[in-house]
Length: 118
Image (cartoon, rainbow, N blue to C red; front, side):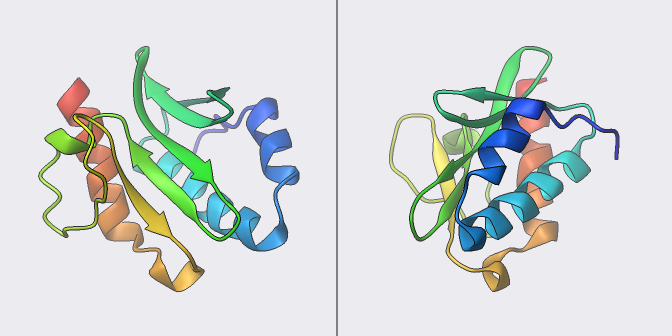
């Protein structure tokens, strides 16, 4: 994995409660493993990941979960039926505990989202 980590996202992560930080860091790792050319930055007060100037996915933290969100999630196949939400475009996966993280399925969705916007 290339080191595409940004200092501003590192700072964001450091300020999270330990349980939420653990989830967010695991998801962040999966995102970078899915495509090591993704750029990360803080946008709209959350870590966002983009490629070629197009927003692909984000992490939204809450008190008891972390959402792995997709800006164009409504357009994804989502064969694992993991995505939640009913907006016109955006969808997310709500992760409450480490056991809910499915690296292979999450990676497939991230790569599908990148391919969709390429």
